[in-house]
Image (cartoon, rainbow, N blue to C red; front, side, top):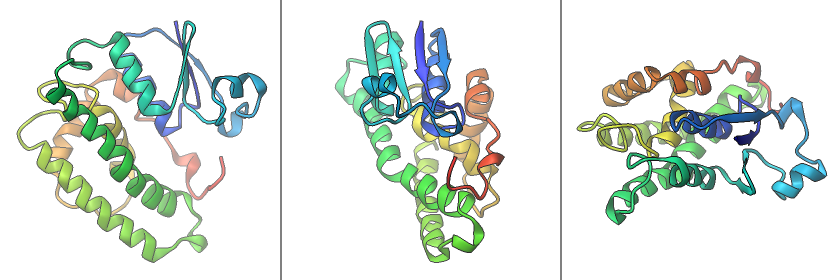
Length: 215
């Protein structure tokens, strides 16, 4: 059985739980982090010396860092939709994962979700939020163009490329913020919402985080 350490409301933990469910992996969830605490215990630090979530244990194997976990699960348990030995096809997965990590997630989660949603109003930096909004408009428009002729970022079916960017969509569309026209992203989001694993692990209420920088 795979053990996943982290709180279910954490975005990066949601990625791991969603993928594990899609791959049919039996999971034992161990809530740590936030109000649960436990990240500074000797046992947890022995698994991840950085004291951060998510972490997985798979038998004798321990993996930390979210994208490393996703790639490990895909390589160990995934079929051709989630893992390929063909370099060009794998580069498609790798580039969208890298793009999400380096561009989309910082703009949305740092700039908007943290800067706008989680930061109390009196402490918000309006200029920084406006810059983040403009960056997100550009990045989600890039996604929209990529999805114009295929139903998933990975191609004709769900694959590893869909997990990081796809996990942003629930919060992005739930926030009361202006968004550009994104018909292909919205159609992709509808397809993701039709999946039980996505509904269970990603579409989780986050209202307790409003106006709270600490958790």
